[in-house]
Image (tube, rainbow, N blue to C red):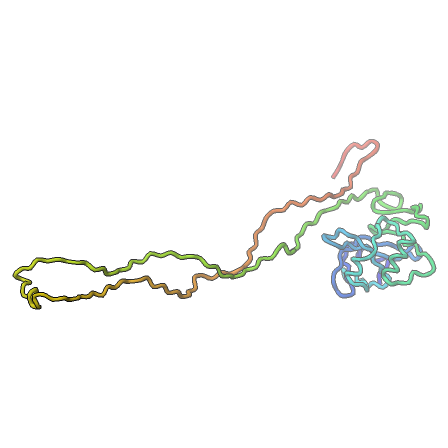
Length: 268
C-alpha cells in the first residue's frame, strides 16, 4: 500500500504493470485533498519517455524500488491526456476514473495536490494555493532558504525499423556467342606431266585409243557445336551493418535563477 511516508522512495522509482512489464519512471505523486494520501502518480511513457500518463494508486503495491499497479502497460500508455500542472480538475479526474474502470463516487476528492519533492503544493477546492504552501522551489518559514534548479535532459537512443527489402531472383537470358574454329577442306587440282622414261610404261600400259573416267572423292571439315551446363559461381544474399553519425536536435528547458537586491558574492 502506497502512503505519504513512502513518497521520498517512490519518486523516481519504476512503475510496473499487472503483466510484469516495466511502464516507465514515476514523475510526480498527487495527494488526495481529503485524506492527504497518494491518489495518482504520473509516469513517463512513449519514445524516450516523452509522454506523461496518470495512473491511480488506490490498489497499487509498492515493494523495494518498484510500484506495481493493476493495469497493463498499454492501458496506461493510452490513458486520457491530462496536463501534469499541479491540479486535476473535477472533469479530468472523472474522465480518468472512468477510463480505468473505477467508481468515481458521489463526492469530489479534489486530488489537486502534487508532490515533486517530499512535501508538495497544496491547492484548495477552488484551485488556489493555500496559505501553508511549501515545496522544494519555495523558501519560507517551513522550508530552508535554498531553491532547487532543474533542467530537461535529452536521452537519445535508437530503434530498428524496416527500410526496405531486397530479393535475390534467378532468371534465364539468351545471348550470342561467337567463336572462330579452323576447318580443312579438299579441292580437286589438275596436274599435267610430260611423258618421260620414268612414266612411259604406265602411260602406254592401256589401249592406244580409248574412253575412260576417273573419279576423286572430295571431303571437308565442318564446325560442330555442343553445349553442356557447368556451374560457374555461387551468389548469396546477405546483410552487413554500417554505422553513420546522425545529428538529433531537440529543445530542452532549463531553470535559471536571478537575484534582487544587493548580493556581494557568489559561492559554490
